[in-house]
Image (cartoon, rainbow, N blue to C red):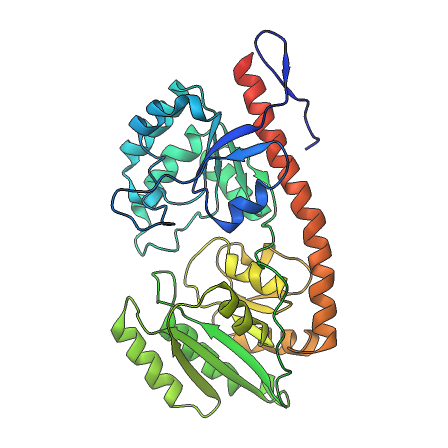
Length: 369
């Protein structure tokens, strides 16, 4: 898409005022990156009743009355995350209120299968309201765009995921004499398959495909989890193998997470379902190769060999290829990869912000005519 002309109002005057966006949410790293260009102002997240500072969910903006009360403060509505808190009927009323306020609605379809839900039926009903009802759609991969076209007959603009590394990459020591494979299970959210992923990793470590690579695994788990029985099963599996170290910890902040990932020679995603992965993007920023299950469109997020997708039973083959071709943690070669990718991100992220800004302007120009 080429950058479009400035917005022309109904009187024929050109306006260079920033596009004011009610984003759901606003305070998210993805949103900050794709709205970083000049000419876009994102309204801060309203604080839900009783919520601690910084919490945006359930999103206050997704309320017809809030939109009516704040219609003069924004120019358009952009949906990213948080719709799972509402019924399809409520979301339909929200779209109607946005259009009544004169706001075009943009939706970035991050998830075609919701990572926070085990049963996808209600989310599918929400998508059946939101995807047809939005004025413009964005998604992250060609595969997701093709699925959107097949399910709803809508075109989606494909814009790549932006950089997630928050600052300079952490400095880590080289892994001593072995290749370290990481599996982060976090708090065992619904799309994580903790037992299946841990079993697959243990099987891969014993597979002849990894002979000679001296691989070991580091499995990480939050102390507070959603499924204590699955946690206990993971503990038992890890205890059964001398090649696995289980690390249980509180939720990591950004710096701690980046440091834990930077020390890996490869990372395995533990997902049973999903569409796109921000975790994968952070690994790419840090130069860490990723083995991803063959679900969703993880393999399309990067086409440079940094991601290997595997069907059930073939994790060892993916890890073999990644460990042989990928750079080792804590080495000058890894540092060079990180610097090169940072440069690529800088160019791509600026282009993405410009294209999203152009989309906003095109929608507002259309609504003014």
